[in-house]
Each structure stands twice: as structure tokens, then as C-alpha cells.
Image (tube, rainbow, N blue to C red; front, top):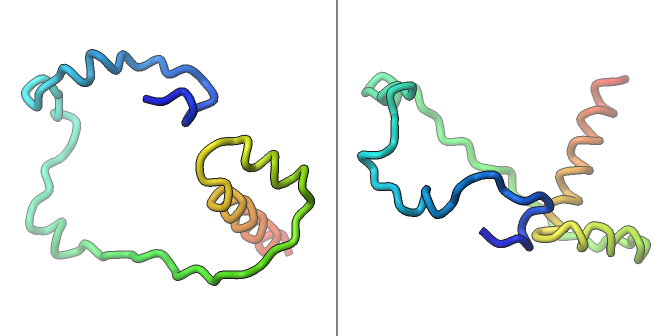
Length: 90
């Protein structure tokens, strides 16, 4: 796991995880998926995104870029959550 992708150090022992085989994994608390599950399963595709141009102050953009990874996806998530909260508070 790359430190670049996370802000905090992972507490997972990744060497141990990488060395595991399927038989080492305890699946006892996960129910098996039967035919009934697949009869009721629905595929939910994400809504298509629209390409826009957004003017944003340089310092705000740099802050999002500094979070690492997909800063545009993060900006989208923040705006989407704000819209949900603003809509429900009316």
C-alpha cells in the first residue's frame, strides 16, 4: 500500500495479508449467496456525469489536489453531499 494514497499509516499487517491463501480466511459470518439473492438483485449504474468548466480559486484547488488521488471526484462528492443536505433542510 502506497503512503501517497493515505494520510494515516495503515495498522493492517499487509505482509500477513499478502501471504494468506483462501483457506486462511474465515467466511463464517458472511451468508452464502443463494438463487433467491440473485432473483432479487438489481444492477444500479451510476448516473452519467456532465463535463463542465468550473472556475475555482487556486488555493482551493491546490488544497483538493494535496489530498492525493482523485481530487475531481472528491470535489464532486463534497458538492453532492452539500446538495443533499441543502435539499433536505428546506
